[in-house]
Amino acid sequence: MTPSGRTNQLLYQAELLLAVPAGDDEHALSRRLASEEGALALLELALNSALRELTEHARLARHDWQTLLVGDARPVAELTQLAELAAQPDSWLAWLLGRFEALHGVDGAARREEAGPMTIAVAGQRPLGEALAGCLAEFKATLARLRETSVEW
Image (cartoon, rainbow, N blue to C red; front, side, top):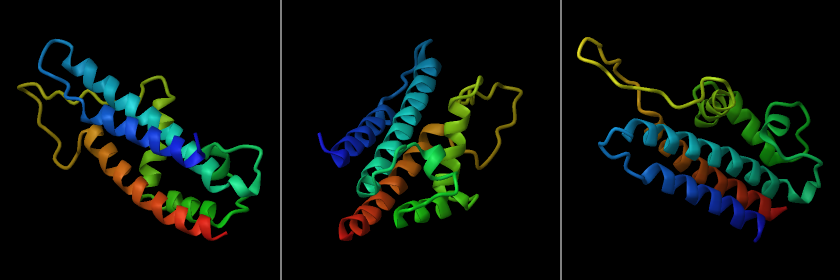
């Protein structure tokens, strides 16, 4: 499989997980949380795969986002663009990197957003699955642009 093929496969698998309905049985909440965290884990793998793909010609020793997007050395223009995007607090990539950190934490990334009869719902907070779907669409659009510039090199 090619590096771009692997990235595409991981993105597709994340989309599939997000599209699975949670159902309405006693396991629905657990199923939703598992789908969201599974999709998030696949997105992290996809980001690392995309970084490997975009920096293939640079022959870097490591391809993880923690090293390439948070560290200082950016020998490839595509990495600089992604690092600048990650530094913008309101960007999809900054949000996604924060969710990756939460995923690796003790509490995980998925939220139990069940409002009981005495709970006031917080407006404007999208479920994790919806937010991930939005990030996935932005990821794919950004990746398409970066692939074009990477091919030029």
